[in-house]
Length: 174
Image (tube, rainbow, N blue to C red; front, top):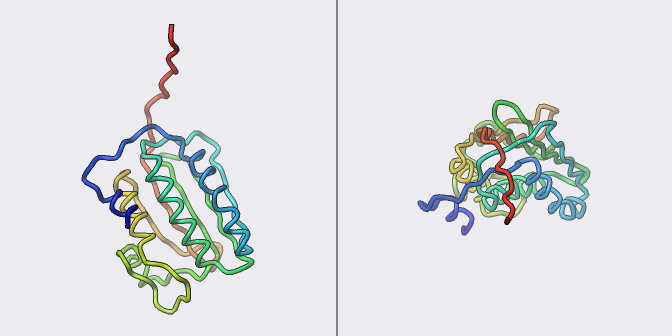
C-alpha cells in the first residue's frame, strides 16, 4: 500500500536521467535467490544500446520488483522468467514468463487494485500490477500485457519515452 501511495502521490517524483538497462540488471540480481529457491530459471537480456529514461529510481525499482515477483510467483518449478530491456524509439522493459498466463478477459482487470484472478492458488494482495501501472503513468510509460509469444505464460511490456538529453559532465572542484 505504501508503494501505491507513493506512486499515486500528487507530489511530483524526483526524476533523473537513468540507464534503465543498468537499473534492471541490479533489480534482477536481487531476485535470483528467490527464483532459485523456486527452481525457476531467471534470466536477463541486456540492450545493445544505451537505454536512458527520465525516471525516479526508487519507483522504477518498485515497478520491476513487482513484475518479477508476479512472474516468479505464477511460474511453476522448472519454469523460466526473463527480464529484458530493448532500445528503440522508446525504451522497453519486458518481463516474460512461461507460467500460468492470464486469460484475455482478465488482462485489463489485473491492473485494478485488489483484483485477483480466480482459481490461482498463489498468495497475494492484488496490488502488484496496480502499482506497476501507477508508476508507469508517473513516467509517461505505457503498460501492455500479452500472452508469451513462445507459448504458455505472460509478457508484460512497459514502454518508456527515451531520454534525449546528453549526460552532464562531472564537475570537479578547482
